[in-house]
Length: 70
Image 1 (cartoon, rainbow, N blue to C red):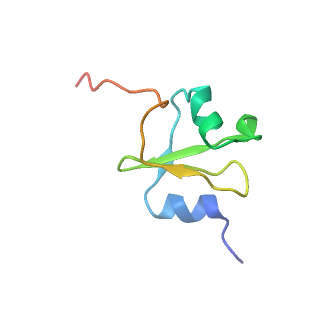
Image 2 (cartoon, helix red, strand yellow):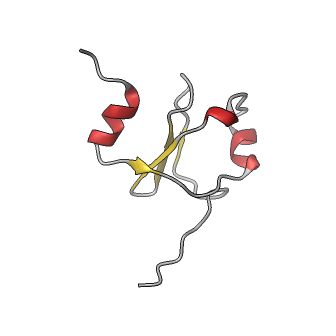
């Protein structure tokens, strides 16, 4: 059985990014499928699995920042 892309990146250590993503990110990628976006994150690398384009970026602009309160 062949694995899908989402399963492969999870095995590589990516975790689901659950923060807000600004519309500017989708504009940058000229994305017509923003409603399907599923972003994953690993070491500052953002990877989308929402469509066949599999957009990726290391630029955190447009991604909600989380504060470490610990």
